[in-house]
Image (cartoon, rainbow over all chains, first blue to last red; front, side, top):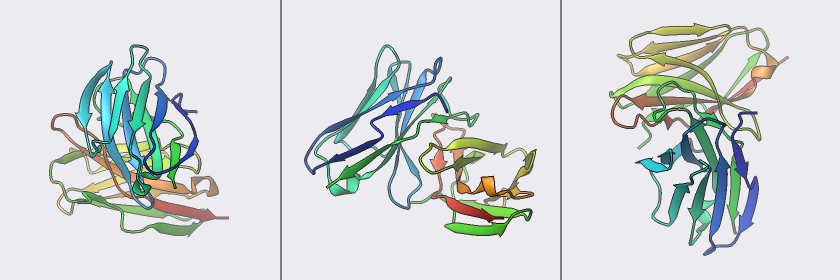
Length: 115
Length: 113
């Protein structure tokens, strides 16, 4: 158990819909990262927040947005969903702002299926 | 543009033998490399890392080798155990700005008894 909690674990929805994925970081961790893993792909970095502020953006679509709340949990909002958005979405957390130490702790992921 | 490549989608070895997982990268700015292990229905977990100032880092049965001139790194597991069966991801970061991790596509290792 990494201490990172993601909900829901599985989600099935239709094209054009909007979903929200939730992440609670490990206790004490200030950074939250979102990654997307599509079929047979590596983990693609989407976005990072540190203590409530956006720190870095990766390959995140404009239809996607995220935020980190004062209690440090984070939500990833995916809208106008397309079939290609079907993927495993991972949240990770770390104490600091960067990923140099390798100590990113990952949740179990939220599997999104768009039909 | 796949900056971190793991060209072998899968690898099968027998228990007790050596497992060698390979990773190539293209971005010469990468100077920190990591391996993550992932079991089904779990998130990736950090395994071992290496800085570009080193060419080898060892942790128990796991050793990572870095060849900067070839832009290649490898993970050696000796001896391999059935519990090592998992997907292994190589990741890299550059010491610029945010230092985000760039992941490879993973290699599925199967260690048979």
